[in-house]
Image 1 (tube, rainbow, N blue to C red):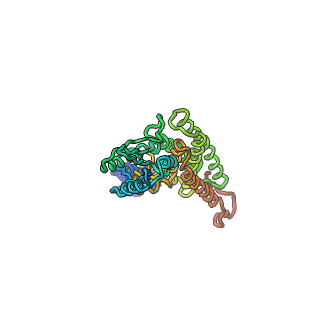
Image 2 (spheres, rainbow, N blue to C red):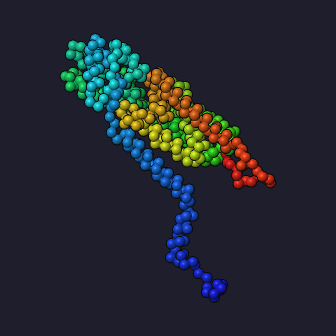
Image 3 (cartoon, one colour):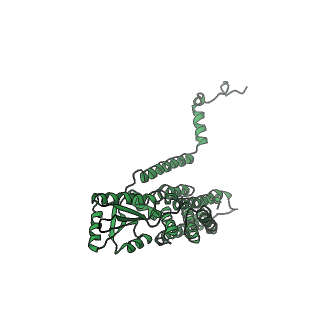
Length: 371
């Protein structure tokens, strides 16, 4: 038996006899500090997800829904618009139209979400809605205008001038298509990071990643448009136009993810999910279009990729592309910014600094960066 210098047999350290120190050491070995920090990051992301979705959807209320008002005389139209604009809570944003044809054109151009046509002689007034813009928005218009008409002792006839397709229940197919494209964009960028390092080692590898993302975007944009259109018959409209939108949207979300990875490493994937999923999806105007969302989500929605994509997809599917120009510019701006940031981050990593110059001897493998 091996003995210590004082003749006593060896034994476990006093602190380890009850096993507590051994267990703590196992915990530290099993869960690194980096892993613990990432777990807390996941917790924060999860709570943000819950807060964002419930906050956006728990109490939809109409706020300044654009509404055209047409009447036999300009004076009657102005009086009706003034009466509707004075409703408590500002649920409507009425503006006069020259006649019913002009009001219809405003709906088809996506300048307004509905139109009230005042009919003389005691006949019911007509409310023109476009359920293709979102069934919940059309329902809110019917309810709000209907109450106002009832208070004036008038009746209302509802006419859906731009109905959604039979296979597009409540006009949600555009939103789900956009969500699928967004998921593909950030997952593709995340896979590139996991397989070869979150930060590309040099500008050449950054450009290769952007090129791979572009090819993926073109393919998945086409497949998504074909599935939503000819295969499932959920969305009408131009398949080539939806293909172009899908390709731009997937590349945009992927480029944002690559840029955030270039800035923050693997944490950039979480930041992309925060931007696109946690903030972008509930504010996209899918289940509840912008006028029904609370102020925070109503303001950020049009500026984020899911919101811009959803609005553009509905415009292409039902409104001959009217109103899609602004959202497409939003997506283009995000994609250019994401690609530029990705390239700049790679250039900064690729640029040698005096402190990095080797003194002598062969290069060490310890400083090599995956790309």
